[in-house]
Image (tube, rainbow, N blue to C red):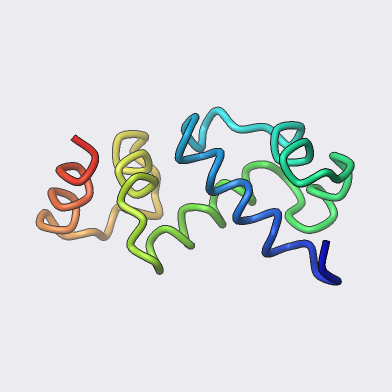
Length: 95
């Protein structure tokens, strides 16, 4: 693993979120996927709530419609400012 594990942990979390839903991932799943202790996930992201918000913010920046759609369906506050067209695009992309 590189010096900063944070990007690797984030990308592992994103992969898991796409596969299982961001609401369903655990620090144990992320740790297993990256080969680190669960405490390492906590070290870089704090709580799972903070990590899940980071996943959504990353999805919004990169246009990851699979995760944006999950956030819309979960009525997450980070997607409340999306336009109707942005919501439709995200939801149609995963339909």
